Amino acid sequence: MRSSSGQISAPLPLPDERPRLAHLGGVRWGLLAAALALTLLGLATVRSATAETGDDFLQRQLVWVGIGLVAMVVAFSFNYQTLLSFSLPLYLASLAALALVLVLGYEAGGAQGWFRVGSVGIQPSEFAKLVTALYLTRYLAAPSGRELPTRQILAAMAIVAVPMLLIVLEPDLGGAAMFVPMAAGMLLVAGVKPRVLLLSVLAGLIVGLLVWNVGMQTYQRQRVLTFLAPDTDPLGAGYQVRQSKIAVGSGEVTGKGYGQGTQSQLRFLPARHTDFILAVLAEEWGFLGVALVLALYATYLWNVAAVAMRARDRAGILLVVGLGSVVAFHVLYNSAMVIGLVPVTGIPLPFLSYGGSFTLINYVSLGLILGVDFRRFVNR
Image: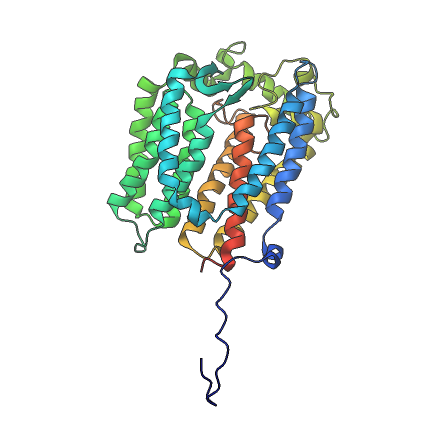
């Protein structure tokens, strides 16, 4: 390259498109800190809730947390743009797994939704949530106007409806419901006309009636009826909510102390290390303990929102919103469930509840969100 003086100068260096390690300081690591704090509280509560069972729930959860941390680093290291290019085959593979589990899966908690690999249970619906978010991100990230056309909205709803239907057939209504906030959050960010929202609400009511009459088992209908009138079946379908309310109320302000909760230690409270782990924590640590947990979730979601707002591309924004919406709905529904405000269903708390596949996917999602934040210096 010749300069103005006629001398040959060295060519200008090309910009480095890889994010540098120096950029790590600009990533919102409060996400990871909040997740790790919730994980530590969850491990302690799992140990307390299962101390009288003699099972090794704590050791198994420690293994899953370790695997999850490794998976988080791997997800963080992948460029999410590259991962999105493989989202369609991943989505199709998840649908195949959901169909296969209906035939070869084993039943737990009233749903045939797990594969058994030795002594380990793998729940394909958890992986389906993640890959559906990836594929929906790829589909909605295509350039469009300020508002999505109706055709694109219907196609996006179909992408979400297929795995939902397969999960409903298990039947696992709680797992299927998690796709709704994910799709709603992503569609709202991508751009939806107001009249489409109204039509969606009406369609949801129609689908709800169909699910009530066709898709729900007798015990699931009973849970809803018990929610509306819990005193009608205090020893049956209303037992879980009743015992959960007792646990939460007896904790008062400061709780009974670690390992001193009567509802959990005397095994009155079912699913105390999974869906009702917040009730155990409330009984042992009281209002202050629950306030700490909710503050950590608020910190996590605040950081997720910040990552979405400063992401540099449409795909990054949509992916973070989708994954964050799932976590937010888990927290809101589970918190309301343990005090009887919504019907009981299998919706655990992210990073806090016991569960292998659930813990793994939570950490993979966290790695992807951190990766979006890290790569905002490149994907402009």
